[in-house]
Length: 357
Image (cartoon, rainbow, N blue to C red; front, side, top):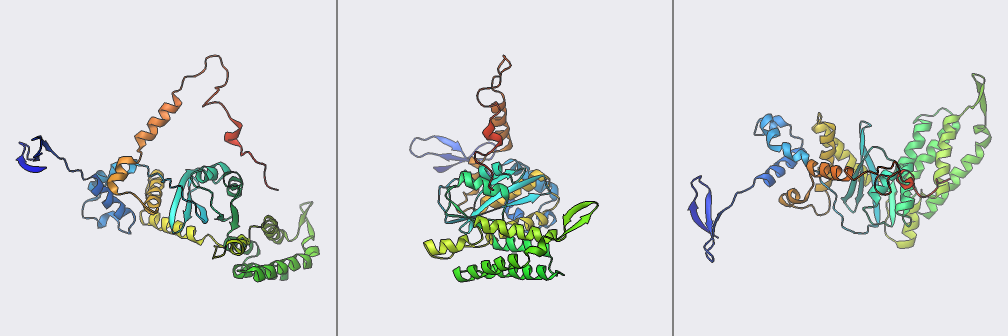
């Protein structure tokens, strides 16, 4: 194409030297505005620090808040996947999967129940190992969505839970000993140290077995005197019984290399997301959710250019259209339940496996 003057409106005219056709090109600034918006969203800059007024900035970028950044599906199988959720004032939670230094996928839910975690896992091929903080719904979802994946309970969260029961300054000798055992958990990195830790914990349980059975009469009811220590013991007993404390050592013996024992990687992602929301505090709930979506997408392994993002990502209107289409299916007139689509299905409310004992 070669330049061919301008139109009456002043737009640049272009002419094809082969066929002689003449046309004009309208340069879109949407991609440039999106880049400016994301640069502001991921920075500490307030709107007062921008080169334009607050009202102008919001007018130019209002359409961006209508976009839903969707996690890409790559089909890549990871060795270890870290899962965690970031809550927003008990109204919503964004479940995030992280692996190999980048965000893999994310899912918006109302709670960390098994069905929510399963919806996230279904988008990711089953990894060799899953690292999590111990959500009951997560473990149950993994047994269905990733039945061959081994689970590693974050040892830092496990020891932190014991410290919540014993406090950092326990008064009883049993509490002091248990706190010391919990602190040693982070240093169990091989078979020898893990075996030593299990022996120490088993000896503690046997030594204080009678002590933890003591009870007190309170308001005419019989209650255990050392209830918090019993809860701490129950927490560790469950982890030892499930065999999720030292999965990373089993993976090291089986496959070699270094395997993670904590989910610090995804916790650092949550910390950065909280910093972003704190720098731009005051955003409505939906804007906070989409801000997290934008951050997650731009920290995937290969995010698309801004122009391509605008072309393929769905908007609020697209989502509303899909909802309208799905809800406008013809209804039965004989009073019977719907056979497909809207009928109540047991599998929609329950996972197809029993609870773990």
